[in-house]
Image (cartoon, rainbow, N blue to C red; front, side):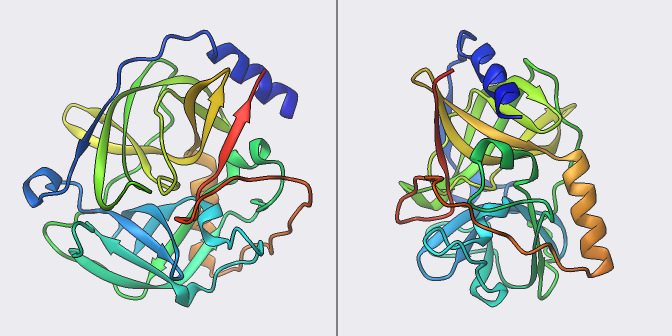
Length: 266
């Protein structure tokens, strides 16, 4: 598995990286249409990014649900979703009734192996039914070379989301996408989207920031199979498999929490 992924990353090392622009969505006008994206507060110190995909369901990364120091699951009651959070105010505040990580995800395991299952669903305690906060539909994995975008919060822009445009899918496999997008801590769980005929759909979420031979890239989770599994588990009300930790794996993070950094030198 690792050898195959390392080969995939080696292939993208020589791929030209398109110019990227990051635009702040700090004002109501700038953020119009993106209020389904929000900040997920994890306890009192960490945060990730998540997206409303149904009126009571938020999509994010599985590793956001774990305390990076202890490796333990954060209590569902310690997780909140702030839809359209900007400058100290959200369009909607919701507590989490249930947080479900993909049953096969293992926090603290081999980071590259975990990307394909680094997905989680949060069921909110009350639906969000506001005209300005419309859930965003999901779609299949785009082909290599397709342009994508990311809307995220990050450690230096935690009070308002930013829109990152003109990223590309550098490589894709059923268990991982490699994107030319350079992300930062806090962007974990951020939606990767495409636009087709004016319609925005989510095709992935950010799992980790990474480097390939010094070039910043990001690793993302293809949605189709893992999301279907999660939705089935959530609908049945079954608990996710308890996570285990593996000693010796070093995942770097900052005080904002909920993010991973991988350095790959194929």
